[in-house]
Length: 109
Image 1 (spheres, helix red, strand yellow):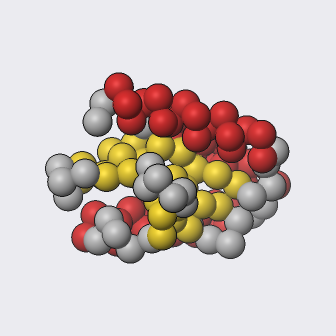
Image 2 (spheres, one colour):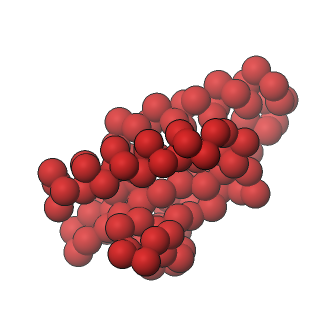
């Protein structure tokens, strides 16, 4: 199964990279990139590997490391990564991302 990233997933991935570049070492940045690649490879092979985030089963939440997670959904053909989330961000932003992603799911089931 193929993994696709929404525009928000790309934006939030690069936001996290930017934060790491500005505040941490190059080693941490490269480790993050590698962790994302490895996790996406696992996800391709087993989209059910992570737990459901909500009771209505709109999203699953996967973990890149102890600071960064990602939200995704899937069907028989495709895995859609909706966004990456740093636990240090404002929880209100998480609500907005989830609302926007639910709208996207309804437009593109």
